Structure formats: structure tokens, C-alpha cells
Image 1 (cartoon, rainbow, N blue to C red):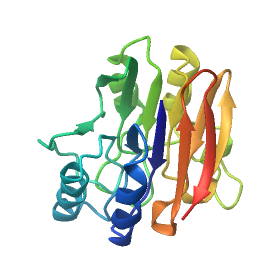
Image 2: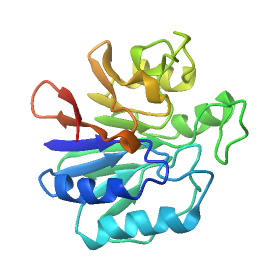
Image 3: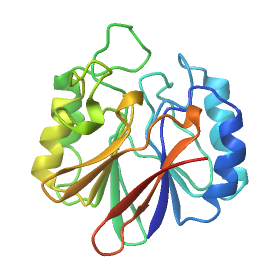
Length: 210
């Protein structure tokens, strides 16, 4: 399976044009949150409706800037707190982010995150989380501080998925490993950044730019 992964669109309308073009060449599009800025429901709904209208199968989690709402759209699946099987692989997700200083629309403390993660299957192939796992390349701020989620890291270490697709920390565009799990932070799509991931055999990821 080949998928394209993005995160952190933050309301940039130009992303849809290149994403629609690229998305048709992959089996699946994965979006790791923050399509909008500050919970803009109209943009959120229109963004995913456009992908649905173009028959691009898409899995997503809402980010801390997104509204946590359900979308009844063909080909579109919200993974927050649930698992979905696609082409024989089990995908699951955690939306929102750990607590920030900015009081954004969708934040979870560690207890809330742990409760959601505890209800996910113990055997999964891909975790999609807006918050990046703590203590990795994928969660380092400009100052080099680790600002990611400890519950996400603990879940990855426990469940050992093939891949974890994350976002939130724009400057931490990278790939890294926790054990055999490849972690991918594609960087902010608002800047034309994305990743491609192959899940055939040993997972591989490439960080690319439009």
C-alpha cells in the first residue's frame, strides 16, 4: 500500500489543488490534523467534501485547531478514538493535542488521551495522531525542547504499529523510529510539505515538497 500523508493545512485553500492532484495517485490519503485555524467548521467541512467529491479515500484526525465533529461523507473516515480497516491494515487515531499555552479548540490532558488510547485495539498497523510522540525527532521545537505527547509515545511502545503519522510541531518535520515503528511528521502542508509512505514489506517514508 502506498499512501500520502499531510498535516497542518491551517486554512490554506491552495493545498486542495495540489493535494487533489497528488492524492489520485495513491491508495490512501492520511491527514494528521489542523486542516483549519481556530475551529472553522465551514472550511473543515468544505475541505473534506472536496476530497470526497474527487473520490479520494481519506483518513483523518482533527487537530487541536479543528472542530471535533463528525462528517457523513463518502470515502472520508475520522479515526479519532476508533479503528478502521483498509486493504487489510488496521488504522486508528487520536485527535487534538496535549495541553498548549494557547487554549486552542481541541486539547486533551494526559488522562483524557490515555483513556481514548486504552479503548483502541491492541493490534494495529498505523496510528494517526495529531500530537507527535514525546522525546523523538518528530516533537522537537525550534529551541530543541521536546513538546510532544507522552501517552502517544507510550501507546506506540506498547502496541508497536508499523507506522505512526503525526504533526502539530511544524518545525519537527522528520522521520524517526521507536523500536521497529517508523514515525513520520510530514511538516506543515501550508508550506507545500507532505510525505509518501509505503507499507509493503518494511515501511518506508519520503519527505517531499511541492
